Amino acid sequence: MDFTFTEEQLAAAEAARGVFAGVAPDAVPSPALTTGAVAEGLDRELWSRLAAADLLSLLLDEAHGGAGLDAIALCLVLRESAGVLARVPLLEHSAAAAAVQTHGGMELAGRLLGRAGRGELVLTVAANGRTGHDPAESAVTARREGPAWVLDGVQTAVPWAYDADLVVVPAHVEGTAADRTVLALVPRDRNGVELAEQVSTSGERLAELRLASARIDAVDVIEADGAWEWLHALLTTGTCALALGLGERVLRMTSEYTGRREQFGYPIATFQAVAVQTADRYIDLRAMEATLWQAAWRISSGAPGALPLAGDVAVAKIWAAEGVRRVVQTAQHLHGGFGADTDYSLHRYHAWAKHLELALGPAAAYEERLGDLLAVHPLG
Image 1 (tube, one colour):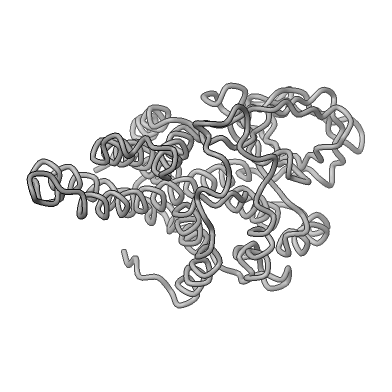
Image 2: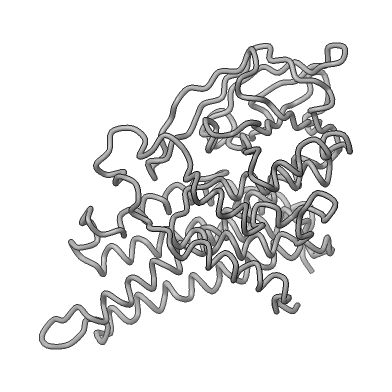
């Protein structure tokens, strides 16, 4: 396997660094000091800059005004965004647009993708199920009534729902086998659609999406087999990229702090106990990185492996969820009381890390999924 990035992928990462260079992680009130959400919506100025830099259309074909790049390029950009805690639905928007392009009809793609690539239309995905731990495709049911689909159910913790024009909702088709899932593009102002405010550990505004006989035109429903599984894999892998970018930034903050903080006349970074802990966290990050690129490469190339794609995604999510937690916990420990100072941004990274750890399911859920895959596809 060759993890060397292409010139186009590296150019996307470089463009992202330029866009995110001026973003301040503490541009909104601290979640530790705020009752409710830290802000009402996404960072619109940053969203416009991402659109101007063509970073909202990375995965779209040239026919839709995009760059025609792949999941690896997206993950490189997401990695940069997490370092500054960028408050934009870059992952959800890009993944939803890619699902429409890959699995949706030509009419739907032609109507949505150009506007999505320019940032004129904001997309998000309801991917956490009813509780955040159950399968998202089981939380909403769909039944066909003439030229429309009717949706009923609840999805929790939908990111950026109040900013999105359309929410991609996986729904189980009534009267069919358990694996029959469609993806409905639901306008948030449609009759039968209600949002109830929730707040993440990071302080961001989420929503519980309640659907009561919401009618969605058939042209706005993706019925292709495997569409939800593909979208979920891309979302999960993108979440791993966010965890990696956040973890790398936190380790840099820790290295800088321990390099200048002195005890007994020496920087604490020179103490063996400190060096061992930071070395362990560096190993965590390298494992997170290797498993991330393996999963992203499988999505991008469609190459076969010893396990189905879901196996590589599960391994990446296990490392990302547990690794980012260990990184921020070690950082807090090595910063001492300074790490909890609300005038210092480390506590914000800790809050975002907890959200990413649990997003789309905790590590235990993916360990169970990996065990099931190994039982069906024994190695060796």
